Length: 101
Image (cartoon, rainbow, N blue to C red; front, side, top):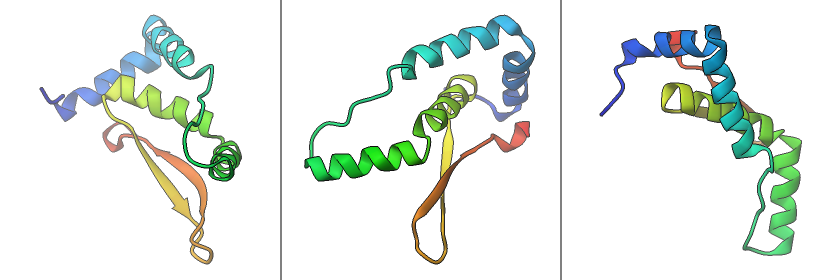
């Protein structure tokens, strides 16, 4: 079923203040993203472009934050922040669950 929104502060508190819970979540996240990822398919030019983009936007740190939110809250949201003049993604902002902010 759907997690009631009133439980989100409890989950954040458990992650923030119970060391065993935080350590368990952190270990799982580290195991999931520690080896990074490999891009497959497409052309070499496109893969090179994506690899450069991923590195320049510190995607592994974003993935870590997203995965912690996903494990603690059940969902994770990231907003691509655009430069208004060039319409290029300047940075990725992981959105914190508003109820817990």
